[in-house]
Length: 166
Ligand code: ZN
Image 1 (tube, helix red, strand yellow):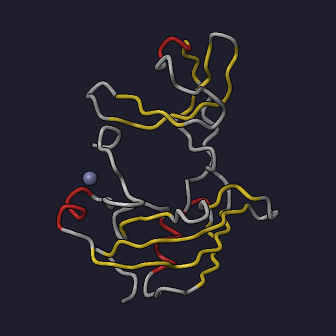
Image 2 (cartoon, rainbow, N blue to C red):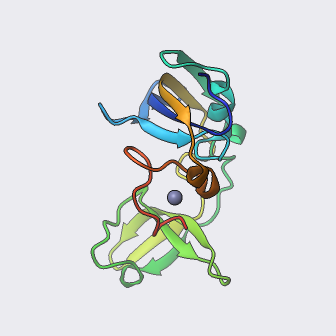
């Protein structure tokens, strides 16, 4: 079986920037599980994985336009800490969902915390960064109809709860 739209794929990965500094990696024994063709991962990585099989190792350099987008240098907005859930961990790079005037969720990221004020931006922390992925392909299986309808995998390693994205 090879990777194409409608497959649920497990990946072990290490993500670095072009200087070789590590930005992220999958946890040992907990691969990233995603639904191919559903925009669960950045477009440049998704495209590089088409046709790959279990055990394949893929090394791919993804430019910002195929990653988290170009840096737009949006001026951060200030909001009060009290607008966030009391139990939330507010720190640089933390991601939260806010609702637009129509109630649609969109992500925002914490830039910094200044006393009672939190500076936020809609821009992903990795916007403008060329992403260097070292990926090893794990299990590949057919997605269920429910997973296809939701646009993400369920079960171990997938989404266990839907309060965030649906
Ligand atoms: Zn779901």
